[in-house]
Image (cartoon, rainbow, N blue to C red; front, side, top):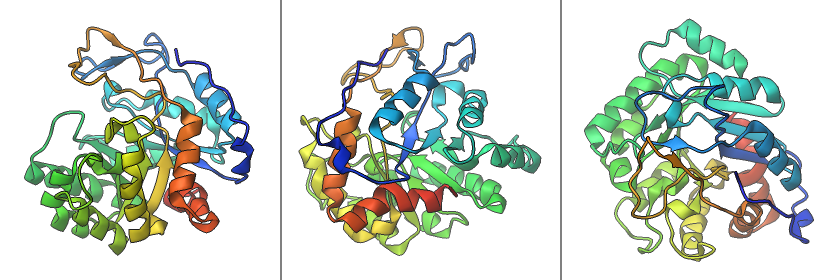
Length: 298
């Protein structure tokens, strides 16, 4: 279970309607939605009710569920959440393969899905040529519906497939700061490529889960990268919590036979932090509200 949360006294200063948490997951009891036999990890329970309670306390009005890898291509748990949220509150990013027909995708669209996820990093896929083929295939598959492709990968892979990214028939959404290394300088290999893709308007970046790029308390070394990405194109930045924070401690190898507990994170601090990094009120509104409304068709 997640630790209890409290609302900071100054949190009401973020008086914005339509704030969207663009990267969340739920893991109901396995008896309700079984996990895929072939999976990298087995998560603890994180219910829709717990996520809703968090968002109500935070003042988050909209939410995007990124279908998590332990379910494979069975999107049932995501569809369960979308039905509960309704079209004014929820959107989904599905996981599919080549077996999904256009009729299948249209049914997902009607349920609130607006993108498809290609999770390279979790599965250890670091070959740019193979990654480029997967992205192009997924992009062509979902382009008729006006969806985007979301990818979780690192800067080296992004740089290695930048020509393919520019040629995609859909927008690309890059998870978690592009898995950069906040302990390294801004001129680390690949970050300039990510900024260029953002500047061109081809790629969005999720300013989410800074614990995936930083090991410092409060993640202050992530700020220069967030500011650089925002400066490259504030219209291509979105924010997310990555709740319930499925990430093993450093040095621990994932074992699907063991239930993996979630990382404790202060989600209120995550929201106020990104508002601080975004700076002026107009940019804050773009990052927290406007860009998500456009990208996810709210």
